[in-house]
Length: 283
Ligand SMILES: C[S@@+](CC[C@H](N)C(=O)[O-])C[C@H]1O[C@@H](n2cnc3c(N)ncnc32)[C@H](O)[C@@H]1O
Image 1 (spheres, rainbow, N blue to C red):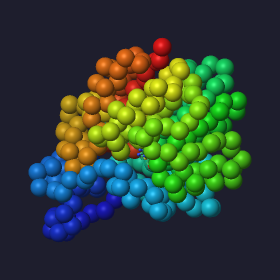
Image 2: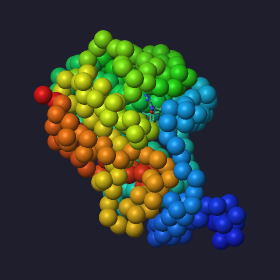
Image 3: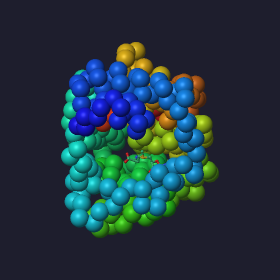
C-alpha cells in the first residue's frame, strides 16, 4: 500500500492514508470526504454519468479474453486493499468479498427456489458475473439479466455464450418501461440501484411488478451504515458520490411486498460503501 508524504497528499487532493493501519485509514477518510463534502465537486449520477462509467470500454478489467470463468466471477485483481471481513477492517483482495457475496446470494436464492426451477432475473447485471455464478448452481432455472450499457450487455452475452452458459442478457434501462414478457420467481440487484439515487423507485416498482416470490437487493443502504467513525466516513463519502438513500423506507412503505430481511453484510470489498441485504417477500 502506498506511502505518500502529507505534501504529496495535499497536492494530489487525496488525504486518504491506506498504509497506516485501520485507524489511519478511517480518520484520513473522514478528513478526505469531509473536505470534499464541504468544498469538493459533487458527482451528478444520471444516465450519462453511468454510461460514461460503464459503457465504451470502461470495464477493461473484465474485458480480457484470457480470463477464466472463475476469474470473471470472482475477479483477478490481487492488489491488496482495505476490506471489511467479519466486521473487521483488514487488508485483503477482492476475492474475499466476492466469495462472501456470491455464497449469500446462493443461499438466499436457494431458499426461494427449493426445487431449483423457475426464473431468476438480475437487474443491472453488468458483466453478468452473478448470473454466471448462479448458472453453476441452478442448471434448471431460466437466468435473465438486464443491463443499461449496450457494450456491457453485449459483452456479458458473448462471455456467457463463450462459456456455454445458458443466460439471456437484455440491454434495457430499468427506469424505463420494461419490454419483457416474462416473470421472475426471484429477482435481485447487486449495487445497481446505488446508481439511481433519484429514480430508484421506478426501477423498484418494475422489479417488484414482475416478481412472484422474492426480490433481493444487495445495495449500500445509508440508513443501515454503522454509527461509528467508519460509518461517518461512509456517509461523508456518499454525500459527494451522489449515491442511493431512501431505499429501505421506500420498500417498507411499498404495498407490493414485505421486507423480511434488512441487514448489513459483515464482509464487503468497499468498507465505505458497505453493502446491505434487503429481502422483500411477495404476495
Ligand atoms: C456497480 S455495477 C454492478 C453490476 C453487477 N450487478 C455486478 O454485481 O457485477 C452497476 C451496473 O448497473 C447498471 N445500471 C445502472 N443504471 C441502470 C439502469 N437504469 N438500467 C439498467 N442497468 C443499469 C450499470 O450499467 C452497471 O453495469
